[in-house]
Image 1 (tube, rainbow, N blue to C red):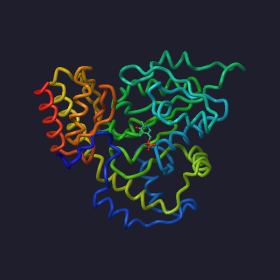
Image 2 (spheres, helix red, strand yellow):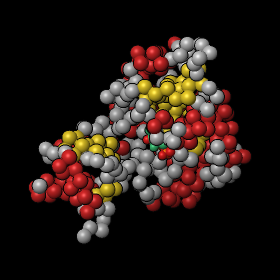
Image 3 (tube, protein in one colour):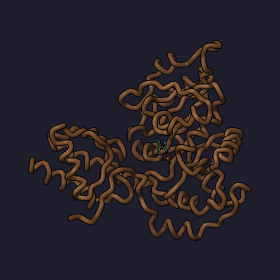
Length: 340
Ligand SMILES: *Cc1c(COP(=O)(O)O)cnc(C)c1O
């Protein structure tokens, strides 16, 4: 019987530590809908600075942040281009279509997560009464834990600009991308009209995302936020956790990446597992059909939680996964494969 759980399902499962909770308890707050919460304002300015944008707006979730970005760039009958695998297309309950009357134009992601430039060009509609108006290109970095090649990002942004499209970056894990590629966040976000950054993933805050862009864009986004019910009052309590995370939890993302690498290399030693080597903190693997269920059941029995079904697993490292958890997971795999 194991009582301890090792939760590899997602980097969203972290708990705020004592330092973060103290920062939250001590945060000066006000009514942020009145623009009077100085902690929220400080967080918005911090993320705007980090990404090299003029303004930011604090939001309850990454999903709302992407939705507000899409609704602030596009109107009814407009269209955004995104990857088939993009969170903003595939994993947000069709919000842009449902709530924004915005048509998605998905195109297939290349294996490295990019959207091939020729496919983007082919998807852009000319002015014609038959077509939705193509308004926006949305990229995601990291995507499936992969860092987009920076030269590709520059080319894609330039292409969008040439075609008169706005650009949005779903940077839920952009800080992971920056740490993994040894570049500044600002370098990775350069040229994008808007960027969404999650504080509740690897950064380890309990709640929140910040959407950044120029002042006009953020003014529109604030109106959308109110409309969608995302206007929060003494939100400095949670914004303080975001500020704390940006101060204390950025450099340590390199530890998550190193642990993911070690875990992936260890798991890859088992012939029945096909493991994609991680660039950041997310590992995808496929277990052979003959052992898939047994392996999944064994992990669950050992208190090791992973995401996925049908032999496809996703393992994510994060702040609350230490070296001990990696050892436990590798030992559990060792024990299982020795017995089959
Ligand atoms: C998690 C995530 C989101 C959404 O964030 P929530 O806070 O869970 O709504 C958006 N985009 C990407 C790439 C994500 O990983």
